[in-house]
Length: 243
Image (cartoon, rainbow, N blue to C red; front, side, top):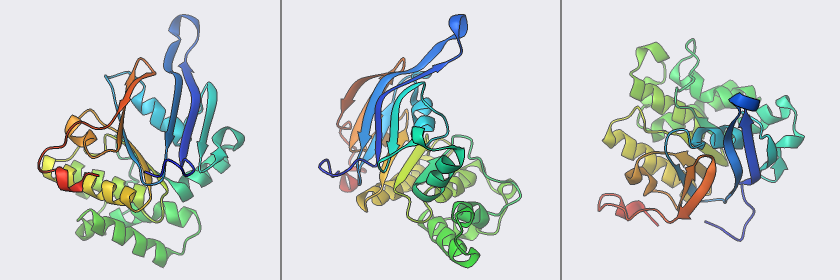
């Protein structure tokens, strides 16, 4: 972590309220968070604590009721929908819990999609997509469609799409949820390596052993940050990869 540098992601006093009056739910209450280049932050907390809401707001997929969200110094509140979409394509990789792969596209085409939408030539975009698939050990799936893959394979394709190219911020919502423990470790090792190379990442997880890969762990309860700490002591298996 480069604490002296400029935060890639900064949330300042962010509130998010859903519904009104009797149906009002305060998903986030005054959350402030800064994530720096090279830093992996794990977010933990019970179901309904606001973890996924924090990620969708950080990625510009939702807007806060109040407060500010900045990615690479740009206030998302000052961007229109097209501007936020452009920022996501160029700077932000997002791993959804339900994968969100395009059924009519192959694994390589799904992974290359953000680059192609941003104007990268098809050949270069496919090359970057194959490299991302290779990082996750699934280059042999390049020409398969989502319905020809297992859930775990689809999850890894979704992760490849999130990290393809030069993503400076990766937001991952339970990125190992559909994976067996060994494959999950491979994904976390790749994410850790990306952060060590300068990417900033926020990962929602309910597993303490996964949070052990992070530089910091942020705990949410009822939409409030109740604690922030170093990760729990890693197991012997994890220890060599931790800083």
